[in-house]
Image 1: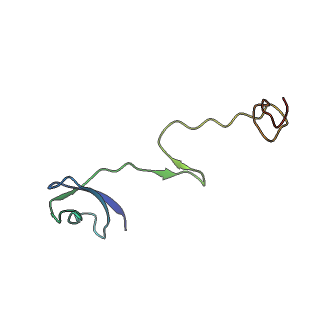
Image 2: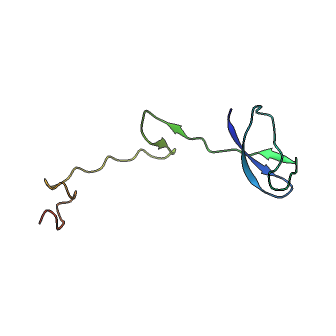
Image 3: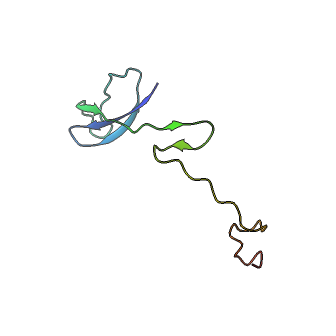
Length: 82
């Protein structure tokens, strides 16, 4: 059962609803009007076990540490004395 987003044409309320039928348009929870319509929602997908794909460019991997210090990645902090 998918969750769809709806907009009330009477009061402008936007709401989400779990529906059994894709063509069903539930009444507005704020004003009770049955004059509602389904909104187009952004699609999110998961690739593998990582973070959700937000549709943008692939993130670059983090740069490797330039020092042997585990406390920082740049070798310029008080914990490694560099």
